[in-house]
Length: 146
Image 1 (cartoon, rainbow, N blue to C red):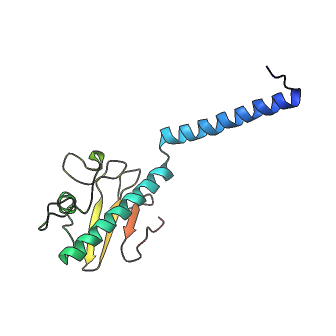
Image 2 (cartoon, rainbow, N blue to C red):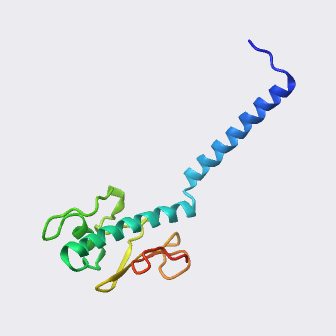
């Protein structure tokens, strides 16, 4: 067995403690599902939804229904050409067949004209119309900061 001097021993202990703290930080972040992490997941989901809606509009020359459950069916293959434009995990929809965000609140879809739409998540507080909403706007093709 190798003998370590005091300096080496302190460095080994300090390095081990540092790794343990980093591990605990990431583990706790994972368990808590931080609000910023959930908002980032929602932004990603909204981007995927926007791509599927845009593909639908290209193929069918119109947007799908604003009704969440009907839109979900349209994008997942219940359309005139039976095209699957969106593949969903089971947890992506509620019992009513509506697409839901990471907080299990149904997304709100609004088609403003023949060339623009928004996708809105109510955010962590599950109430639409305040600063924690996560909204995708097809005109800017971006997620505006609340």
